[in-house]
Image (cartoon, rainbow, N blue to C red; front, side):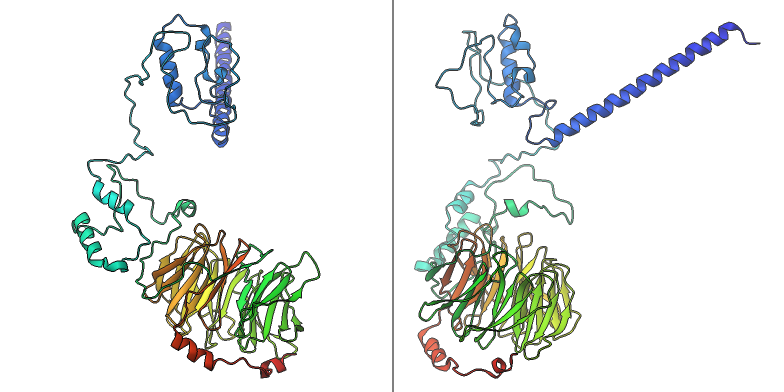
Length: 566
């Protein structure tokens, strides 16, 4: 039979056990509460940290107060949040034991200034205190984010040469080739290329990123200048536009194609809900069409090869065919569920790309116009062009895909996934119909050349900026590309080495589209700054120009295709 004392001991042990459980539960709750507080402080990036380590100027102020002596005011022992230092005020040392009102000449409290030095005197004490930091060794952290250049390993002469060297200077100007070679050999001592050399040298190198890692901020903090090698040019390319045209209400939309130049030397431009024609011969402007609803807008324009019919796509998903000579609407073709952002002609077949990712083939000669549908893209089709021989169709979409279709086939022959952003810039080589050029958006910034017969990537070059459009020049066997952030420039490339021939700057916003004149001498660039600039960058010599002008005659009669449109 258990005694009474045993029951008492068991009761006390049970009470103690329960108390321990309550204490443990309270500690768990407090730990979770502290964790939530720390997490909320870390996520508030725009607010001061209450529990973080003190800044250097705060530690220096406290050390100066400790050196001033223990006879100071009791206000000196206030914590930093109570004294207003970490509460969002300006990072300056407050006066101790003083309640003086600030003078009229004090600066506005909302201005932010970085503290450059700490006062050398302690308030309330006439004794000078040294402004040096107390001699305390700061432990080095293994994960430091500061890289201090080393003077002993830095080549000062090479750094000065790289900083003072003008990259835009033509090495052929004035016969300075031999001189530049001798300077390069003496400076670099035959060890490295000065263009690839570094100005500063560091003892500790930055850690290598993991394999396959892609920094999302690379676009924002990288240089906008193209790093491709510069090709030698034997011709003079004007650096200023030949003409500047105003384009008010030009939509700043990367996925639209609002500019095209016809074989009759008419430049078509979509401005909001209207389409205007500019005659490059006599500089006359004509309003071709205008949408009735203010909410609707023109999303793309494209000329037929003969230059007398203009295809117009709008935001409602309809495609219109206009007779320019009579300014008459010939027919309207529907079928798309969203806006039409791209158009491409192949004889009597008109291909249209939709925001839903669908591509429709329209036979403009028959009443039942829709003769094919391609559904390989998952997002908006922003780039569309047929090859010069009409065998292949290239389509680029916002899903980062570049598809190549053979004829009217429903499945793509090639589906390239090399681009890391939307593919709007697609252009076929005029003298090599099997070569295709494509350009990616902001996250990609590459121009790639493809052989559609083998599916191989012939060349890839990083432009360091968004690629909006690409054109080929048959006269000089070159390419020209329009770019966005950050230079908003046009770059001329030498094919096939893809060396930079020239850069044309002047636009204050990104280039949205390019169009080439029928003689191939002038390029029109439409940009988000609501201007169109005409660049005579492919001007042909007088002999070529006279022969081409004699062979070019503007047709006066209607073509068989125009008569067959219903």
